[in-house]
Length: 154
Image (cartoon, rainbow, N blue to C red; front, side, top):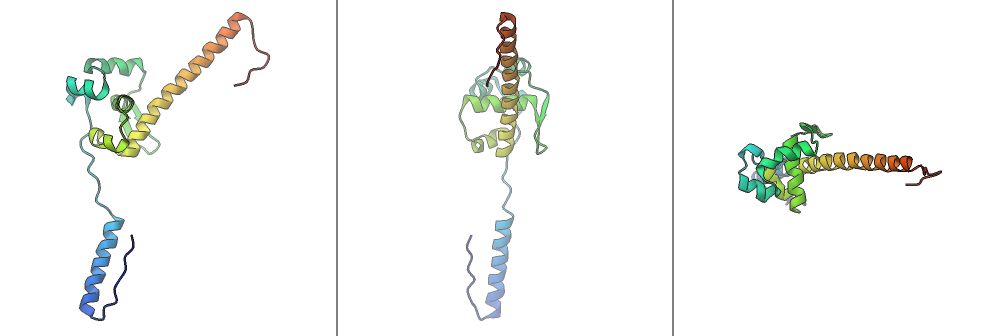
């Protein structure tokens, strides 16, 4: 932001312009906080809204939570706490519709970085779990076939 001060010889005019500059600098330094809206709660979501937003029926959400082994809560490295259901809803919404994070802020009542961290925590947990499971299955199949590799490169 470029602000130029005009030279004014009158003392009344300069104090007014100084006050304007002070106000301008304070406004730039401390912008108004953005209203996030209420947090999304599964109990308050209707059956139709659940299917439209997440592409799953409301009755299946608890089953999904258990089947995907999503814990009761996640805590990000910044200290934000997400319930398991909230993390599942963020994951499903992001995977079902390619929205920008800023478009999801009013829906979930979370900031863009918080939404991104919740999504990343759930995705990375499941990628790492399944990657390890595949490696163990692969090693076991090689072992039971009796054809162990002398060297293996990944």
